[in-house]
Amino acid sequence: QVQLVESGGGLVQPGGSLRLSCAASGSIFSIYVMVMGWYRQAPGKQRELVATITSEGSTNYADSVKGRFTISRDNAKSTVSLQMNSLKPEDTAVYYCNVRHKLALSGSWGQGTQVTVSS
Image (cartoon, rainbow, N blue to C red; front, side, top):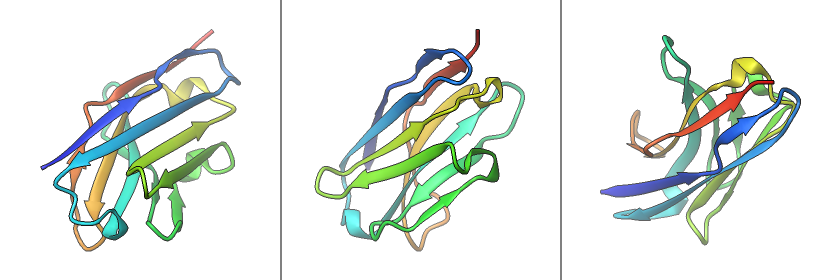
């Protein structure tokens, strides 16, 4: 069982920045075979991919956040972060950390952290 603890959400004005962090612990066979990522779910919408990163540093971003968000990870600390710049009201959602084996389709989820972009 993998435990994920997220932090860093909050209220920010349009154009502002936030940094989300997620720490993984528990039964992680090896962080080096895990893909870490962030997803988000806005009210009334399905959960969607924001960004993922492999242990080698290969990243994947949703088109809507490319150029504004940056995902990073620290394998030694089993952490993943999401730097969010130029935030827009449509970025408002609950953001979830996810960790999965690179060969798996699903994995473990954090409890979620609310990000609200509003003036």
